[in-house]
Image (tube, rainbow, N blue to C red; front, side, top):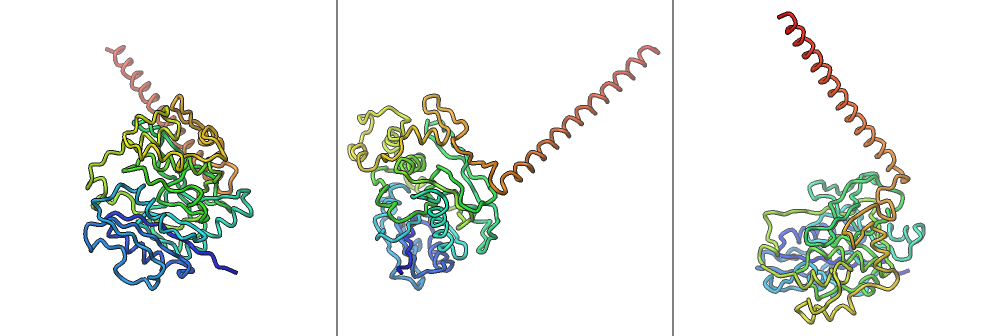
Length: 366
């Protein structure tokens, strides 16, 4: 019986943590010989090289090297990473500054297989914002809280963005969601062929995850939050080189394209200056298994009024194990706070009345 393989996509921009990510990936894998890595590194000099020290699995590592001056943002780099995919059984897209838990590969595959056999889904995909690098645990407990994306909002540019994750208690199976995070995507390998990465989204950042989520949903894929943490991510990285600091790039064409595909703007391709960007819609647009309207209904978004309401499913699941107890604790806490405030207000009222009564008595005496 053929053992499953995993392709890990890593886009790296002048990242001195990339090599740590690469080594940790192999050190923590249960079956490292079955893990293949595709790196698109966009570096300024050799000291930023992702692969300097041997990992022991050199034949499994594919690297596309380019000058940081030719970089076009993370979305384009992830497309280049996907060109290194060679039909491995599973596809895993991550960022270049992550640390993995022990046996991450086995846990991830088991989640997909469990969803396929017990979760009533034919095309499951795992995605979320992983917990913070500073909280890293190589061997976390299976009952540890997991980060979930549960809300979206319209930003000032009229684009739909996702709010930061919240911690939730894990369930027996990964919990259904709809939001795809670019820094964590795990699915069967045919996902790359079915929902191909778009090379014509130059300099795009805001809008990447909305577009991915809509395309994934309309192609019939079901998004789930992992039911245990598999890796930890370094956010902010304020002192590190970043694409946005090195380049004064204009993402207007890509953002306009995203808004048109996702129905946030009327389709008028003349508004896109680049013909290459406009003409790529036919290959990199929405799927036909579900509609865009169903997607927005699913996540509780009204495009016309630009409002967000309760989604079709409860991302905060009151009937899920561990969820109700969390809500009870929260409710009790809030109730206690409200009662304390009422008590303090009552005491303040009584003190005020006593003070006024004493003042009136002194007036009468005088």
